[in-house]
Length: 325
Image (cartoon, rainbow, N blue to C red; front, side):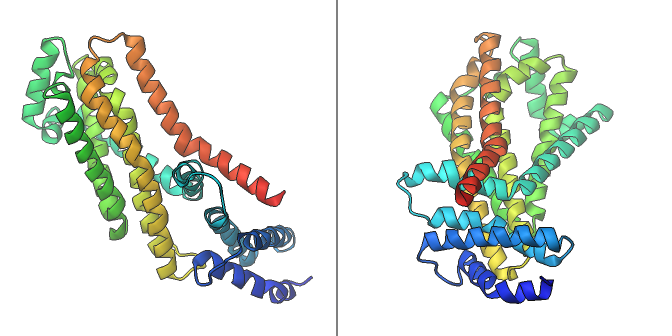
């Protein structure tokens, strides 16, 4: 069949499907929407076979990538809404916007490396970034045998509340600054990434690197990882503004805001746990066995990495296989 005839034969179906997933038409029957999705996948397969270089393939592929979220947030389920949010909605959003999340990780790695490089080539750079008071106090703490003592002052409860509130504020700024076309998100992430690089190089320079790792990364595993994901949420908003694809810019922006907010919400439990760990556990790093501190760090990193980078692929594969079966 010629491409023009294929488009003419199916364009009304595709338009109806697009209107359903963008909210222009309320789709009251999730099963009918799922049925349309099956037809869409068949059409995409056909187009990929016979018109591989056509823009039609791009259009149908975009519809397919948007549709599974709509189907499974509309479809009736006996699952608890809270459970479904974390086991399906967030992983599917993380899969759909995986490129933005990957860019956030690359952004973090780049500016952390810049922080390390700058510190290695400028003896005063650490003081410019971390401040004279912090540097002098930490040098004194290293001499006294507790390199991360600065994180152990104050009450446990007060530290937990103050740290958690501050981290939530930073995360919200990273996410919301996406509306500045991503510039604000990038700037905040750049500042924090450089600080991480400077911080770790400073302890390396003072022969206290592993002591800092045992102390700081007990809570930093969740805290920093969540911050990167929040940066990715800001990038989602920015990309929806610049790359609406087949949607209108207004609709693309609305969908981008909604999905980015969903991903931001998912980081809040990790941020709260990070605050708890910093308030209650980090202060014990110099007395707990090394295997326990490293075990906490590896467990936290493994869990959050699996949730945002591996689990989404498994959920997407399971749901698409179920839909097509």
